[in-house]
Image 1 (cartoon, rainbow, N blue to C red):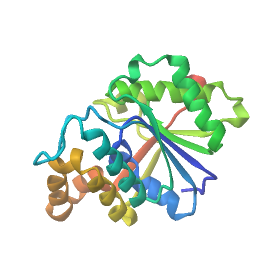
Image 2: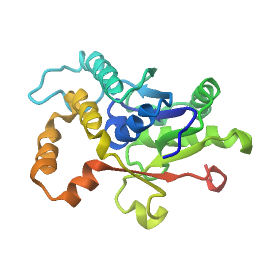
Image 3: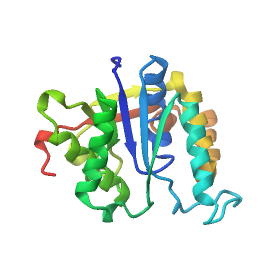
Length: 227
């Protein structure tokens, strides 16, 4: 992994960073690279309320806000930005305003690398709206000013369409930080952490590597995008 000058991570929900990129973020922060995480919503419509339940629909936004802060701290993020949009409504936001939001983040942080979702292959409507806005904002920039764009894809059969990942990191040295980030989001992750920890301790090594110790990205060429 090369040392970046600044990494800008843009996801719509608290915990989006924990599952797929928290090890990678910890790798960057361990090198002293500044990382800005712009989380567009507080995930207030998250389907889980804890296991056993400890949140209500009214308390969940505040709980998820505190969980997000703890997760960011676990992986070394000191510039956490909560952008205040509403969960499960990003697909209905004005496209130009979404692009302007991302453009403002880029102008403010001047990143050499942006991490977000891959448009068309990230399942959730909020993920897709975020991905579109990121691609369109980067595409507006002069070619020589564009940061590298690393995208996360996980829809069923995505490799049949976009091929194997361009960048694959083994994050095993940062497994503790990644697990801490996932545990921080306990209202949403309690249901799956036990199974994951059992797999890591007693399961098949290859399965554990795929599920936890490997993070992968596709380098997105905005010039080839029809967005």
